[in-house]
View 1 (cartoon, rainbow, N blue to C red):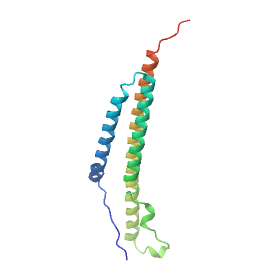
View 2 (view 1 turned 135 degrees about the vertical axis):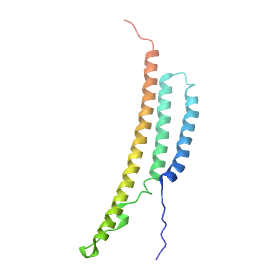
View 3 (view 1 turned 180 degrees about the vertical axis):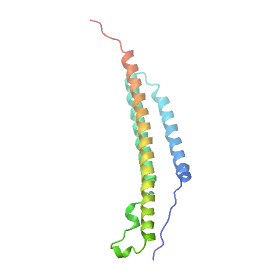
View 4 (view 1 turned 60 degrees about the vertical axis):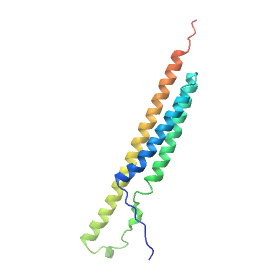
Length: 145
């Protein structure tokens, strides 16, 4: 029998890994945003900033997918009884149900946080892009007939 590797992921471990990644992304965003803010053309500035936010969002999303989704238990990894004879007692049924419930809850929590962070980051980038486009359109001289 081969030994198996069991990894226990707690919220503290996830935050110990996730927090530095968030901080690195924010630092990169601030450094490049300072460079982008020097651009005199407001439309170019808006597109550069939106592109930077989308790139960082992609990096962050990829990191989350690599970190959380493979570590959340898969329902197929628990096995299942092939016949009714494999389940002899109520305790065995309870054990299967508890394992499946734990896997579902862990996966649902991972997806919930993933979608929450994705939506917040994307909407923030979209809002800052819209503000820059509005400023560019208001700064443009209007033609009078």
